[in-house]
Image (cartoon, rainbow, N blue to C red; front, side, top):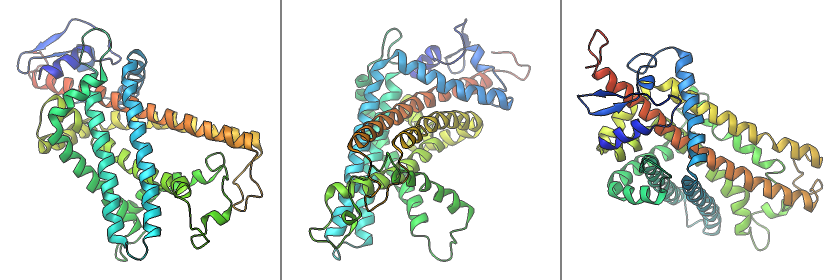
Length: 377
């Protein structure tokens, strides 16, 4: 529990430093301004929950700005996602090239392997991020020190990654392979279906700079389809679909990794504890996620400016509306910058999740150490 004490003491939330109240039962230092904001169980007014959620996101931005070493998480997570995109594109190429020897069952198995490898890398990096933030009382934390510490929890991280990969494949399969008795107008499937909708914007300029004419997508033309064409846009669309699903799973189980690496809980205890904390702080988690999503969406919509400036709408697949090479180059630079920004927002989200976890645990410990009259023991 000493790690949690360290985080609570140095938590970079919105509350100012003030004399600490000691909870003799757990031995954890709790900033009073945070611990007693709202009800002891993490409830309180809706506006207070929203304020704490947005505050955690803003605090995550400030933490990342102060501690630039955490950008190693951004870089490595970006490389993992880039590798996933290439792997998904290569899988599409292999599936096409090996027809009819590679059926849907084999395709699902290979897709699961890619999904599991992606989730395993991301969960391990997230564990390193969680451990690196409070690793030093003064000065910048070392992200690689956090990664070294995460190696101690390899078994738990492996197990949790396996659970997430199965859950991700289940959500993916429910939507794309739902049987007739599970109608597609079901509300659950409608929600899942929206995960695939946003990726359609990648068909528009500048995300699709019309680098190839329509004939490049003809599976039966001489020479087939190049691996590059499978990666862009097919690999990107597939990887983005799984990324959105994984992001949803991470939000729903936001506190599993902190419970695994900070409190050394078993996988079952971490999952149960995470759901219990999310249930108490769902409004804060939702406010934080929505705030980061709005920020990312606001930046995403800037592509409309490039569309307007270039005079391009959705390109004609025959290439008759192909933009000039200058605009194509600008679009590719923009795509890379947007990807970097998205991964930075993911880093902020990881830090914000730790802030929310620390706040929730602080209030929980304060509630356990308070008698019915409201006096701290």
